[in-house]
Image (tube, rainbow, N blue to C red; front, side, top):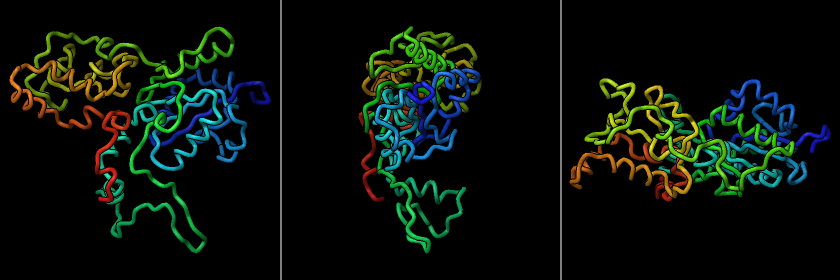
Length: 331
């Protein structure tokens, strides 16, 4: 507890885009409940918080920490371990912390290839091909940057995580519901779920939430959504040949993307009990192909425009694959 008698709250942003930070602000006036019930002691994006202030706190003195982003460098890892030590409840907040997220797709290539893409692309003027280094000697002294790891890891691949809250980002109403639950627990009116539980998500799939009409799916070709001449506003997107990830993705988002004509891309991760999201989705896609001929099935599957991005957009770092062999090479 803080001196004002409130339990302590923390939030941290590691390897991610920052959308999870914004999603917390999108709960609007509910943020006042956070302020009323918690003492916010560490939230670098929203307050002047120093690492040494966090280090000086007693272990387990922070009741609740929302940690968003994967672990891509040694600074992420250091703060991850520190917050685990200081926190009673550590929540993997958002797709990147839970599954690796879009940054996890960097595990398909080497560090060098990642740096080339970022620092030598069409949007970057870098004729001397200068790439980040962990240290650099300058007249003022030696400068240091966090050391990049060869692969991105999920939060629970480094420390124990108490709860998982998926989404890219988590929906505001789901965040509000979790905040309400924690406040009720503090007031003795509710109990926390078992450790390791997924909170802020449903127990079924996006297809079960989707209001589009579903018939017997028989697909002859997969297409990018922009290549479909006319999208039927009421028919299942997968039946129209648009690779929608709804059959393999946890519910909880109210099928917002399919509702506006965009396919589900899987940000809520797999339902409970699924070992590998990509394998589950491959099985779902294969089951709706209109053919029993292996060669024709292969040709239809080959029409999926971006297999890696389709099957592992948010989940590569947590999948059975984890990374490609190139991620461990200096090429």
